[in-house]
Length: 552
Image (cartoon, rainbow, N blue to C red; front, side, top):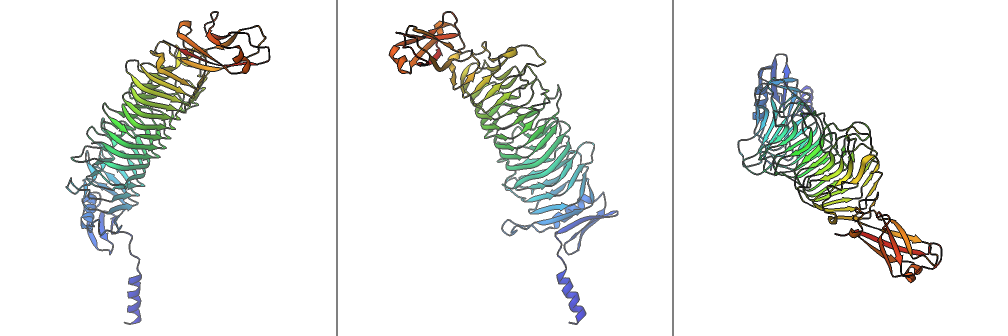
């Protein structure tokens, strides 16, 4: 081989291998595709045959099996502006669509891409990925974008999507790598009662194990995510750093759902008097099981039916310092059957409505923990339960409610609690400054059974305990046997319904005992202690522990 031939051969061997399996591009009035060697796969008229050329590329790709793909993808590189006027069907696995292309879709009431091999029994195609692409619905009637049917481990990453009716539809998709990541969905326009992203009923099994991460959804109407009536117990769906704005709900659940989690989301909704912008809404007989909402901010509210073993944690509702809620609805509306639901460390914004901030229609076990509610406009109640339904256990723990603001647009009294028809425990809470300006610690007309309210280590304004206790210290003078302890702080002032127990502590108190406690006949809001003999003289030498309790 002469020198020239050798150099040509060497250069051919050193020529970089393209990073794609096939290239689809535009050249003036022509759309064309070639493989990695430069061989033409298909061509046609630009704007007319774009979908056909892309379909030809897909059909020409090698069919990888799971056992031999070894992590390899067939990469289809798209360059240019494409117009799709008919659906593209993907029946093969391990295909990545990438590039700097803009894809305009005009397929009224149908999908631009359908991933389905005709079989509803297996999980193929798998590993179909769309990356770094722009999609826009160019039709008046409304087109749909992705339809994944009986497939697995699809991925949509770093894409911008605008104006579609349905952006993504899932029909029994599987796999732990299902992912929508760093995607913006703008001006979505779902049909009535549908969602920009929806899960539909399959013929077998269920959709599961999907992650939505860093997804922004902006809607013109309707809802962001809808899980259809018979979506067969969709489960293990996670939302991480997702943002939703404008009208419509974030979720509409129409069927049981399990292991849903939302982390660090932001739901910023407009709404109107006729368009309630529910943050989460579920329908009758829906069970949300192991449902976690952590660090979410919303200007809407949560409206749910059945939550089981679930958490609402560190969520912010509205703007604490400025904007008030516009909806005349409870902020957290637990409509039915909450079982082991925990509301932990919520942050409430200004709420100038004659509504409860938390309303419980019925609950089996409900925990409300670490609420710090102070110096804001509040509703008629912080927590209200439905007197017509029995709540088995409502547990309020480590909460501080302080100085409800009196400047509000509605008139009438407001209360921290309206607890009716159930069992309630208040543990290690502080309630201060809430009796001023017609704000009261409880609604006496709705607390139906005081014996079902248990108080543990609670600091509060007087007048609402069913049990109360404390210590008292007096100075004996050698002649006085009767001493005033002070306010008992119980919900009733009827002496016949109050039992007072006294335990002497200091040696002088013990020496003067036995002693008895009783309601002060001159002022039924106070209690007194009477010793059998006068305690010895001294400074603060008579110490007792008292316990007062409402009895039936």
